[in-house]
Image (cartoon, rainbow, N blue to C red; front, side, top):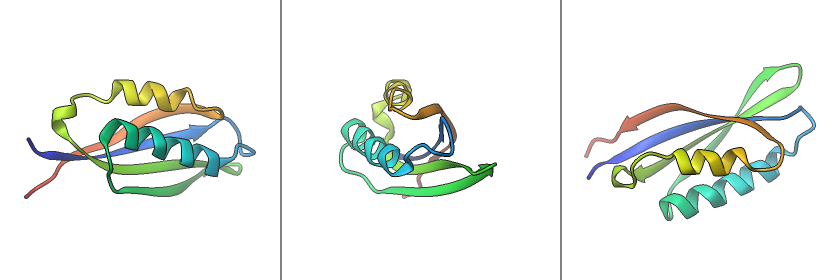
Length: 92
């Protein structure tokens, strides 16, 4: 099976939400779901001081869909929404 690169966008509930805590919890959930993997985190300015996290990681496509992971991320304190914004199959 090939690997896939997935990017997830996490929107916090408010500009005062602790993004570092969301990032830490998200990484733990992702590593628990995929196993050890490279994870890249970017911040994206939205509006009025609201900043979203864009988290990119690699997983084996044999894991199937990531609905369960999305549900776990949605249940993190301070998270308003979770959206998969990109899925790409790796070459090689």
